[in-house]
Amino acid sequence: MDIERDLHMAEGEGDWSYSSNSRRQEIVIRETKPMIENAIKEVYTALLPKTLIIADLGCSAAQNTLIFISNVIRVIADQNKCSGDGHVEVQFFLNDLPGNDFNELFRLIQNFKRLGTTDEMAHVPPLYYILGLPDSYYNRLFPCESVHLFHSSYCLHWRSQQPEGLEAWRETYLNEDNIYITKTTTPAVVKKYQELFYKDFSLFLKLRYEELVYGGQMVLILCGRKDEDVYNGYLNQLFGLVARSLQNLVLKGLVEKKKVESFNLPVYGPSVVEVKDVVMESHLFKMDHIKLIETNWDPFDDSEGDEVKNSACSSTNITKLIRSLLKSLVVCHFGETILEPLFKEFTYLVAKHLEKEKTKAAIIAMSLKKE
Ligand SMILES: C[S@@+](CC[C@H](N)C(=O)[O-])C[C@H]1O[C@@H](n2cnc3c(N)ncnc32)[C@H](O)[C@@H]1O
Picture 1 (spheres, protein in one colour):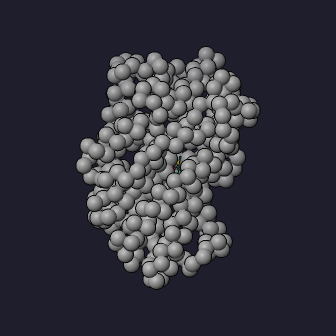
Picture 2 (tube, rainbow, N blue to C red):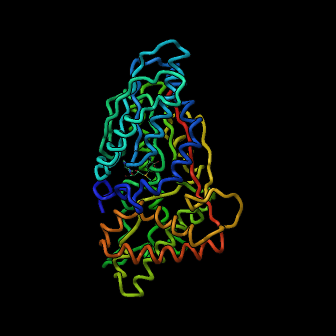
Picture 3 (cartoon, helix red, strand yellow):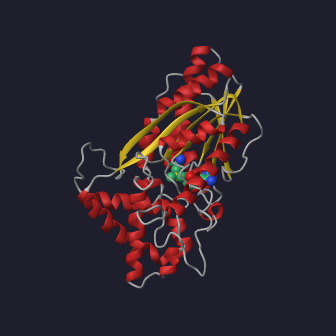
């Protein structure tokens, strides 16, 4: 599996697309709006640039990146009014891996521009330009000290590759039939995941530090873990259920056991402490804020409380979301024909899980400043 080549969210606008199943991410972007507003205001008033350079890293091809763009435009319009300077222009770079559906993204952008962003705005918006930037953010993307603000939402839990060295000898695999860290994952395998997270996130910070101007900021949002126990996070539970679905397909003779054993997801959900440790050890950024946001697994369930009202409906919604995230990697490793039976098993197991408990997703949001 080559992540740079093979990973992308499910394309298009259909029922199973990422675009139709990214409501939870949208809610979190709205919830982190004050963090973004604050970062833009600070950068703008401190540096007074003629052109603001802003990048959304891991933008995918859905409305969420446009919500981010319209938030930025609105804040700049307000700032222009306050400072009496109406000439600032904004250059947006929308970055994702080359397999991302950039065609769909630019179709959405054309609509967005046609509808205009000024309707609900009290002040005249700045001129803005949008460019696509297909590459991995684990590479250098911009010239030195050229960017004012980086935003990245729901991305940095994705690793740059599968953890190395999980194959022992003669095709025996250290993580057996798990696909992420699950109860039976050994501490040695957990360490490989943690080391990869440390290496990737440190590299990401170093690269962005080089690209940011002094006074520039980053707002980063990623899936994480509430509990310090590395086995006890919502990604462990969710991907544990995907692994059990695959194991059931092995029992039914639909998938080879070795195929499941050689499949490990390139993700890691860190705790707030783990994130802080990497930022502190890098000695590059001042961490202005960090917080943990909890949301329901079901992207369409906004209810409070500990009970899932309709576990059949919620499990379908969760399946659509997880399928839109994992489809490209699953198809690449197992082939297209596995999709239907795999996610049918998964829906069933998620419904059973939700009948017992309403598990919450844990999202980490932070803002970092280069001083
Ligand atoms: C769940 S989507 C989030 C999309 C959008 N930011 C949102 O909030 O809806 C995660 C995105 O991160 C992208 N991604 C993962 N690893 C990446 C990398 N190394 N470089 C660039 N993009 C990456 C994926 O391709 C995917 O589009």
